[in-house]
Amino acid sequence: MKKPSRNEAGLDRREFGRVALAGALGGNALFSLTGAAEDKSQILESKMKIAAQMSASLSDEEIRFVRQLGIDHVVIWTGGTNATYDSFVRLRKKAETAGLRIWNIGNVDVHNMEEVTLNLPGRDEKIAQYIQYLRDIGRVGGIHYTTYAHMGNGIWSTKPETTRGGARARAFDLSKATQGRWNGKVFRMPLTHGRTYTEQEIWDNYAYFIKKVAPVAEEKGIRIGIHPDDPPALELGGVPRCIFSSFDGYRRALDIANSPNVGMCLCVGCWLEGGELMGKDIIETIRYFGERKKIFKVHFRNVSAPLPHFVETFLDNGYMNMYEVMRALREVDFDGVIITDHLPYMNKPATAFAHAAGYMRALIERANAEFGVSRHVRRSASTKAVTSKMSPAGVDGVPV
Image 1: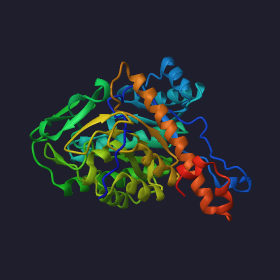
Image 2 (image 1 turned 90 degrees about the vertical axis):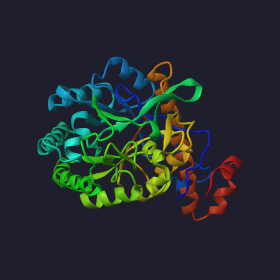
Image 3 (image 1 turned 135 degrees about the horizontal axis):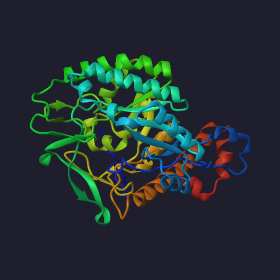
Image 4 (image 1 turned 90 degrees about the horizontal axis):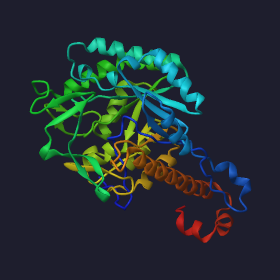
């Protein structure tokens, strides 16, 4: 598998899921060609939206900061007593009053359920809770997406490490891994649930779950984006990460679901963590699933290196050229939201987010310009005439 190219552009990661912030494009720049007015209809504006991850309090301070960044789409996390229909309605009204659109309201209580992944006591009750959650967000109106994760023992990390300028960041070193965490619960080595599970068990449990919830998602108009395992492609604590840890795993899982409402929450950071273990690189993955309209949401982040040891770093400081990722999303006309999370800690979380939001906006505008020119030149009846009117920068800087 082709290893992702390296430049001095990396990505920011996740330790910022509580009150993270991101943004939606207020207006994507279109690249127009002098003297090519007759073909402007061929140069389409990107539908990609940057989104901010916000807390369930949706505080005035958060709203003001997001609006100052030019963001108008948000992702909100809830759980416990906040994960109710009435709470969802309240959040939607408050967001809309502030000029924001909610892309999804996540519920940590049913986002990643060990009972479901491992067929533990209470599985059917958890599935019923998830279905009620789908029905509730469907009733709210205007919300058509949610993220699901199929990890039996949480997200695994090791001691935080430093990245550029001494910023503290989430890290994972397989040689030092001892525990995973999710929603306040700790899962410890050597066997987090007392035994080793088989890959077939994990697949069977996924099929049992998705066959029950997909019809409800279709009925309520909710798309379920499944997040990759984090970290992927390993067996940790006796639980194999065998489904949402590779290109082939996703392809098979989506075939099992057999639903237009089940797709990917494509976490670029997790894909880069896995490296060659994922079977296809991130660009190939975007092209395959994006062309089939199976990418519903993107987590835009970068890491220092693939497994067995990585540090989540700034967007412009990891081993992947993140512009290649953004351009691939533009090529397949991705029309969902892009968020950044797990950000390194600077002087305050908002600083890291502002850096990431600005960087993503610039990448989108560059991709719009480049893809617009490429599309125009490919479709123009007089390519030679068009290119002769382009500026030197346009000719030299934009591959046709």
